[in-house]
Image (cartoon, rainbow, N blue to C red):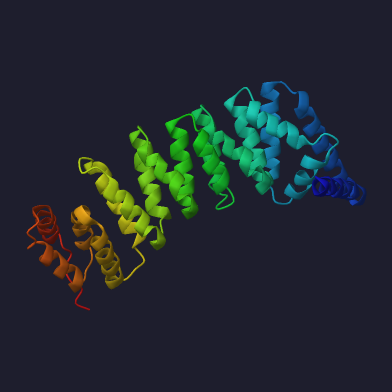
Length: 304
């Protein structure tokens, strides 16, 4: 708290100093912004949206932004209080959107968390606004987006959260994304699998394989979707490295070895081909059928 008060005091001192040092035009500009921020406090809804929209447009100007950022948090009652109130409690989607635009254009990462709250809204317009703003805050927004995912009221909100985590390469939120593959909503499930394909790394291979092997044999859609996730964990490895990982896992897979032949079919490697041919001769019918089917789609051996 002491550090926050110190920071607020410094900003206030800076703002006062800036006014004192500014030229006549700058002083007039500052007074105008202060007047607009103060009007925002008690303005009726239509006027509030207009004020927020105007200030958001002004903040988009890199030359005006520093002054607006300082004034936004250094007035006697910070304008940020009223902007956040408009964001969270504005009576119309337009007011909430303009408040979001102002916070975004001010360019302060401190506003990432309130912007992420829009993703959990029941209003699709708010969800779309939050998504559009947070798309430009890679990594800094991941924790807030993951929290919003837990609170989302609509499939649209969950899809938006998942897409943001995918676009920001949020590998540490694997579990949160995986949980959404159990959603009753088809679009949420599909987006969750697509997001997993984007965020997984080689160290996720064992975990994803374990989840794959636990999937019911009757759930063909899930088996196919998880296969793509497994493939994504290996995407940056050489063909021989991929085969090595799969061979090792197959030894541990017991009665789900058949799953892995489909993976081998897409690897241009002599070792992969030999494993497929060996599997096609297995006395185990399930393994034999899986290997035979995979051989028919084998990509061939890279001759280079």
